Length: 407
Image 1 (cartoon, rainbow, N blue to C red):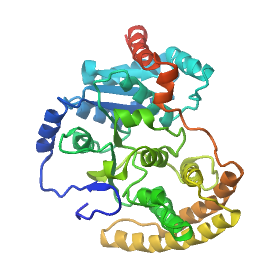
Image 2 (cartoon, helix red, strand yellow):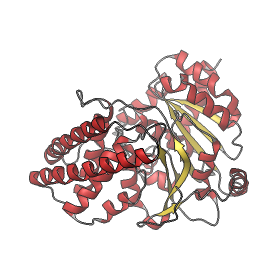
Image 3 (cartoon, one colour):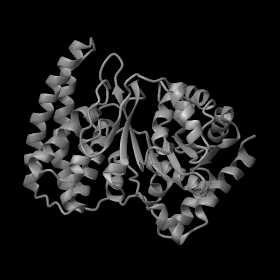
Image 4 (cartoon, rainbow, N blue to C red):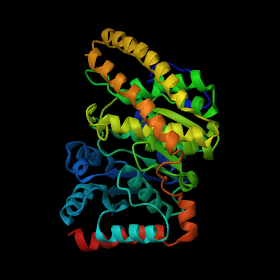
């Protein structure tokens, strides 16, 4: 974005348009000699068969600065799914490994972890990311991990380079780097960020005060971005939520486990797009309403863990403050869309805000009744202390599945 403002406690790395991608690639190639980078790419069977994934593989085949690529195949139950995924990633060569979490070997590892008291059975992106990090932790030479979604429709390697360079370059000392971008095509997307998270954080600060965690969250331009980079050491220490609270939950763990001055956000793309979830106002167990509920619960529970006390009346006040701020935001987005020639359905935006507002009190009541909620996935530090063979076993699973099902 074309400004140079540094707001809040984290560092913003802008794209001023004053350099080209080839220069940044040269810097990254030089840096990874000393600080190798691994890429985690979680995909479902549906993602793997969609056009964006094939385009991403074609781009990543040229990314010679990556030491290891682990493609984590989840929500895929058949050997045909595995075989198709193997064929899809062949252009990535020998540095790419396919980790099938739902295959017989992956399921056996999950069962072993569960029997040892580690709750890792809930499927989803969070668990896929967790297994991908465990796979990379088996190689101590890999010093930083990059996470990217597998459904980016306009992907190019410039996104990867800009995300990875702050973790590898010797002149920077960041422990965590989050992507940001404009979710925009012929209209604005990113409704949960625009219409829920941003006005919610403003409302929480107005009602509950300037808690450092809220200030930290508010510093991110796109807190729900699925792409981030993290040092191997911090990846070992962070708990990972296994629901739609993955992104804000990750930020909560980063806030807890490192200093904000070691945190950056980087502009990786002028425009960015991936598949869109339906709003699902009529069924709050699906779509953006499910996502919003999980995000709200994660933020509220994190604040509870920091000693903030919520009475039921707080959530009613918060709902009222949020609604006014979100309605003001709709007026702003409408004007912005008009200036940029974008389509804007103001009525549907109002409906989304009303749905999100109703979730605030409903989720607040649920958190009030159960402040801890569903446990996050365990830290890898805890797992390898009790079961040091597990990261190596994940490598064996990928190797043995390739031998049996890869063709």
